[in-house]
Amino acid sequence: MRVLHYIPSMSRQDGGTSMYMQQLSDSLGGMLELHIVAHRAQDELPVRHAQMHYLSRTWKVWRVRADYLKLLDEIRPDVVHVNCCWQPYFAYAAIWAKEAGFPVVLSPHGMLEPWIVGRHYWTRKVPSLLVYQRRALFAADVVHATAESERQHIEAIGQYCSLLSEWHPRIQVIGNGIDVGSIEMKTSWHRSRKLLFLSRVHPKKGIDMLLQAFSDLQKDHGPLSGYTLLIAGDGDPSYVNGLKSNCKSLGVEPHVEWLGGVYGDRKWALYREADLFILPTHSENFGIVVAEALASGTPVLTTKGTPWDLLNKEQCGWCVDVTLDAIKSALLSFVNTDEDKLQQMGLRGRRLVEENYDIREIAGDFVKMYESLWC
Image (cartoon, rainbow, N blue to C red; front, side):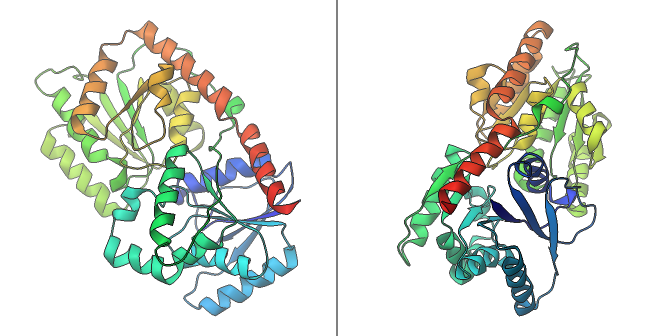
């Protein structure tokens, strides 16, 4: 079987989607003939088990269309799998493939979540839906969701779009995966007094709430006195500088370290060194960094903006409402948890990821989905 994945880029700067594609290709490329089509970018992640192809970045839509259709004709994939949406080329990659007669899978990667749809709703999202995004959604033979919550959000926006034309969706839920076996787990849960945020530095990630919670629990010799908050990730310089100014206003500037983008061995070392990983996000279709932290044996605090309610059930972290008070309450619970219990949480978290999110099992689920379209 031959499958072509379209992705905006394989740049580290694009965060979770590029890293997801890198990890998926390692396993999926051993099960079928895999091609990845992207636009060139700086600091690209290496891909081992797929053939890379590149489209130009230009406003000349007809040129991109011609190059893309030529690639499809040369490769003749059995399935075209398009990743992401909202930007014109992301949508047209699905529309053009369907018009050329190829089965299409569309993975929105959280871009149809309510928080994302609500941003710039009238100025960007509604015009995009009317011009091209609705067409791309309706062109897909299968829409891929990474969690049940994302499936519900896709259904909701599909019903909204169905006011203009009828849509009979086939939505399949397959979670993201990681190479658990290659991830070294921490060997000590003795408190380092380090808290870690590691993700893209973006307004949806809730870092402003985290800084406020950290400040409230630090001041006046509070329960987080003596802790350091590590923030690792790239972001728009103006937004990052605004957060740094906020640190100064809150009085926590000496206790917050801004690490920028961190990758490779240093990233995994940070997961292991931290007492707690925190992702206080407003919206996340999966949250691959949560799985990475759990695989490293580090308890996690995240929000119900992610599909990680299992943290509470499996007792390997805290999944709370997207509010300042809920985050502060969870941080207090963490402070009052002794090291033996933190170790048990870490071991349970590792087991949860091993049993549910191993990339080899996930890749096998993708192959079954493709076969259902091809056969």
